[in-house]
Image 1 (tube, rainbow, N blue to C red):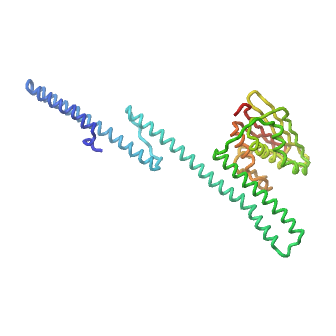
Image 2 (tube, one colour):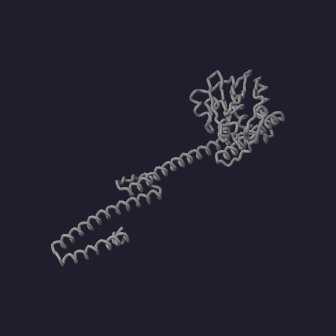
Length: 336
């Protein structure tokens, strides 16, 4: 930027140079020496100001170039500090903007990585049952298969289709939870009825394994979205049944405090390894045991955590190998 093109500089020169020349001209009538001194002093002051201003505008220009680079995606630059009032404030604001941009970039990068990993996981989770379905269909079409074997394969096919439909349904609901587009329809609900409804799909598997379920939640109500909470509690109970051996017990106990309703779900199952606990609510996370046995998709506890937290509640888990697991849920009593 040329100083001569700056209107502020032109104004400054107009209000300093012209009066200085007039003063020198008037003083010359009385003392030429004084006029020369005034002229030299004026030139020195004006020159010093111009040098200082040029340096100042150079710094401003550099700062402008830095901002332009930031706007074009370069967030790795370092902005030199200024020891001047206005420029130091401006530099501080730009530095704060740069820090925020870096933070946003990191967040977006993490979300991009998470999305890519999620898509890969979803593809894998869907590919497995679809491959099995395709294989079963090819076997059913074989003319050499017996009627008994064909009926057995049809039952297996029906089970796979049901599981795949459930997986797709859960994935769609989780995508809504993650996107924040879910509008809960909260109403006062009898907690005991909600828990019994959550356990209904598990009664047959539990009966086969001779597992005992105890629900102690009499006279306790909860302000929540009934359908979403049924699935959330159902996922936790399903996880308990899968990790509890035959003749095991699952107990649900609820109590009220002045602030929240606490629901504690315990089982006498195999428990989790200590290294699994910090990740147990992560999306698609499955313990080594779950991966080897083929159990679950690593979505149930993640789903439950999302629903509980969107109800302004908390969920935590404690577990010991061979001793069982305890899940504690706290939901606010007066949350609307």
